[in-house]
Length: 316
Ligand code: TXA
Ligand code: MG
Image (cartoon, rainbow, N blue to C red; front, side, top):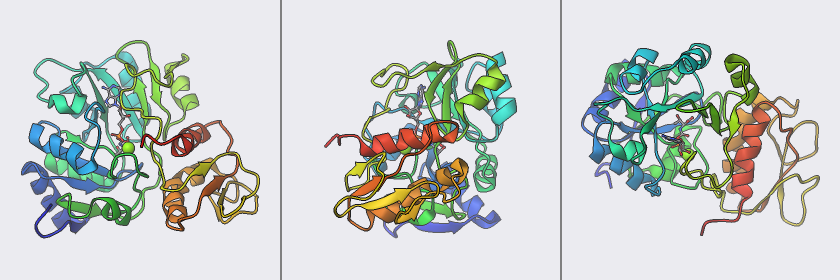
């Protein structure tokens, strides 16, 4: 436990400087990105990275994303390629993570990569994240800032509800804009979609001018740590519902009658931004959750991926 509890820092120059100092000391700081709040630690410091796994209660086979301030910073750690360049030019800073081969003498803790010879890297777009990464001037390993298996946080209050007293600080800069984690694309070999997310498959295929290989569920080698039951609220979740049954609360999309609507006008970007906060709100009712159908195209693929995990049989 942190003796004086978790500090809440404002995303102003003083707060950013203090957050960077805490990272330099090997301590953990949760910070906003445009996708979700990340739980950051110095990616070169094995003890700091170990404490990320400990704070989250996360299975140690699940590798982490290294967050950096710029393409140049990413190139210090991974072997670059034309495909990486095309994707980074199109989507960085932004909600895209690239998995690339590690360079010799990269200095990244093997706890970040879980012993793989590749590294997941991304340049986030959120101004507070960019300011923190520039000030810290090093790679920050950061999974989503929630206890393992629970709903991802899109506000500082969500972070504190799961991790208060277990991390040094949270940098508070309001709700996250995208609300879904980054899309993960493997470009170490043939380009492959490892996790759907904030940039759609269609957008990525348009830039690469080729079709991506798809991650097969259970394909542990491609995307370690893609546990099926994930993002799980406490209550059961039922998908493709048309009405609530029994005690259920109904989460809707589009022009439907429901208790809470992800986007009454049927806008998938708005639905993505609202998804995790809606699951937190409905979870707090203590009632089972039913969700109406959501289209599978564009950001809908990532929303449905998260909802299927929330509805999957629990790992116990
Ligand atoms: O939007 C996001 O990506 C957020 C924010 C904080 O940046 N982060 C996030 O991290 O979602 P996390 O730890 O919840 O998810 C990281 C994913 C895991 O599914 C992991 O398996 C995959 O990245 N991953 C990390 N390194 C990898 C690698 N070398 N090869 C394949 N997959 C990797
Ligand atoms: Mg996560």
